[in-house]
Image (cartoon, rainbow, N blue to C red; front, side):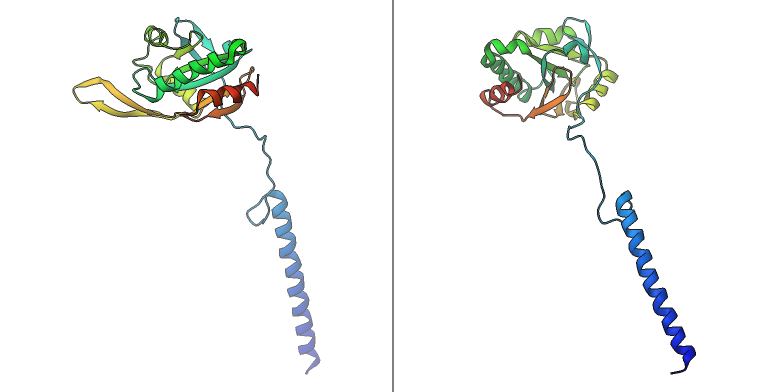
Length: 209
């Protein structure tokens, strides 16, 4: 084989090896930086769901409140509306039983009902509705913008689902049925699914109290 051809293949082999090392180095660097070429991406997380935050609403007495109003107690929060035929009254009844089951520890918990239907659920209407449940309930409403904000803060879905064509004020709402337990300083602790028994909720609550 001519000497010139030997040199050619030797140089070609060196170039291929060098290219291989270059690609490997690029992938290693990309994986460290979390780039698209990386196989492993390093991420970090606080481990706490991003639920809850600042809001301003009005309670059933007509007083302006915020998330700080409820600091110092654990908050048991549910979003619904007073014209709800089943999920809402069932949930509030369960919460009422939970408060009774907590006994002397009930003073450490604030049950809160936030409406997703501010056009119909005025403070006065909320006050009348909540007389059917535990006396410690706080009912919160506000204008449309305030309710949309608090829904976003707590990641709540709600929208009109059925409406009487002859009466624009006669409608139902689809909405989230989950309830939240917030800490004394307003941080998310856990959630309760719809249909969970009062005894199970009370037991889980006592783990935090």
